[in-house]
Length: 284
Image (cartoon, rainbow, N blue to C red; front, side):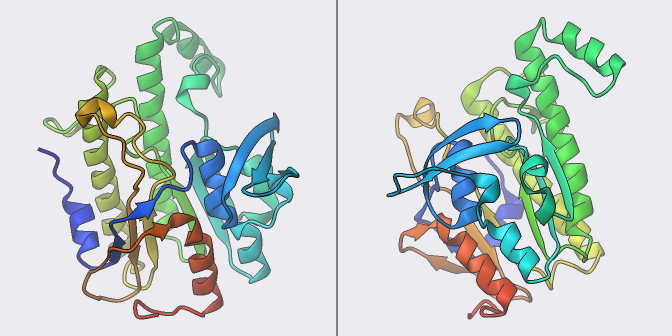
């Protein structure tokens, strides 16, 4: 029953890998792995704006905000970068490298505070019903992220954009039968598939916005995930470490399937090659 017309359409005009491996099991390590182009084996927050990371095979640790990640490399090339994401405090860590940034809190850990007195009072009341409040805040994170993502993808000022959106992450917040957001879905497996269809809808909104702004045909697009569905065994008893990996080049080209294993951590090197002009089209 899961319909993903926008992802199917994108796959039909892109390079797509069917054996792409997740960069990490947790967002804490997977996002640094993707943005640094080197697998991170351990990560630990040490302050409100610093993450201590350890690269695979290394014994020493370093602070992520002092590392040379993709945004720093883009800035050195004169490229403006934008981030619309959740989980990590990107603005605190990489403000010097970013032209625009929206970073959103994790609803599970930010249930009672608010940006205004009225919002804080409402959140404190709603937090007494934690399961509902988590879904209520998740809806807000989804809406805020998509709103700012639509602004970023239609603005040619940004040469590199990271959109780490909520996607099919739990909890379930979408009712595909009604095409509406909901705070009353408490099932794990149907909630995942429903959110996956919501992700497809969001991709369609961004595509149409880019087409209207004249940005779609001239843009590169990489669609992937920072980790697998960690509760997939509740669906069919199996765990799968693969994630999507779809690369759309500028222009119109037929889809091409890659069946060999792909390490998605190499996204960093691919993006850098595109920014440097070493890769200019789908053939490259």
